Length: 425
Image (cartoon, rainbow, N blue to C red; front, side, top):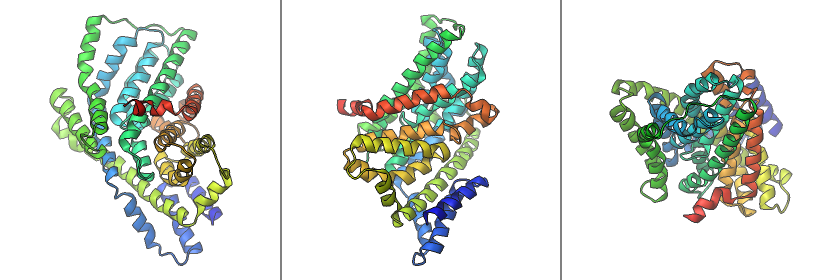
C-alpha cells in the first residue's frame, strides 16, 4: 500500500502536476484498491474539515496585508531606515538586506512576499556596489526565510492547526529569538564577505538624515508591535490581529503614504485571492492525505521504524529536523507541516519536548528546506522574480545553507533560544 501511494505521487510529480493532485490521487487509489470498506466521500469531508478552522482565517488576511505593503511604500521606508544606520559599514548593503528582510518578515509572515518586496530594490543596490548576482540573490532568498520565524508567521499558524492545544501567540513570541539569531549570523558573514572581496563602503548619512528615515519608518515599525503585543497581552486573537493588519496596511498606504489608490485595492485583492486559493487547496489536500495515512496506521509504523523505543527529547528533535528539512526540500512547507506534524507531535511531547519549542524547530526546518535545492519553493520564486535560471539562483546558496544548519543545531540543543522570551514574560 505504501509503495503504491509513493509510486503514484512520484509519477504525478515527475509529470509536472501541482502537489495537491498527487496527494489526492494517491489517497483515492489507496482507498479504491486497499480499503474497499471506506467510502471515498470521507476524503471530501476531511478536505472540508481541513479548511474549516477559525485559525486559518488569519492566513488570507496576513497575505492581503503583505500584498498591500509590497505594492506600497512600506518596504522602501524600511530599507531607507536600516540603510541609514548600517549602509556605511563594511558589508552595509548586505546587512541592510538581511535586516530589512527580518523587519518585513515581521510584517508579512510570508517568505515569497519578502523576496518580492525587499529583493527587487535591494538586488539593484547590491549589484551597484560590486556584489555578484549569485551572492545577492542567495542572500535575499535565505534572509527572506526569517519571515517564517518572525511573527506573524503563516508557517506557525499552520503548525498550530496541526498540533493540538498550542498557542499561536506563544509560537509568535518564541520565533523572535531564532529570527534574530539568523540575522546576526548573516550580518557577521556579510561583514567578513565584504572585507574579503573588498566591497566598497556606502555613504555615511548624517544624524539629521537618519532622524528623517526613522520618522518615515515609524508607522511600518509599529506594525509588529501592535500585532505581537496585541496577541500576547490578550487584546485580540491571531485572526483578529490579521484583520487589524489589513486595516493598518490600508490606512498606511492609502491615507498616510498615498502610495495606493482605492481603485488599486480590487487588483491587489485578486492577487491575494489567487495565492489564498492555492494555500487552502494545499491545506485541504494535506488534511485528507493526513487522515488517510493516520487511518492506515502509517504514522505508527514510521515512528516505530525511525524512533527508538524510549527516545530522549534530543533524539526526537534530531529526527524531526531531518524529516522536515528533507521534506521541505521537495514539497511545499505547508503540506509537510500538515502531514508530518501529527505523526511526530505525540512522540515528541511524550519524550518531554516543549510543544512550542517543537513548533519553532519544525518551522525553522521548513524555512531552511524552502530555500534549499533541489525544489525549495523560494528558489523558484526568486527565479521568476529576477528572471534568472535555476542554476544562477542556487549558485551562491551554500554558505547560507551552512549557516542555517549551524543555527538549526543551536536551536535544537538550546531551547532557551526559542523560549527565553516566554519565560521572561
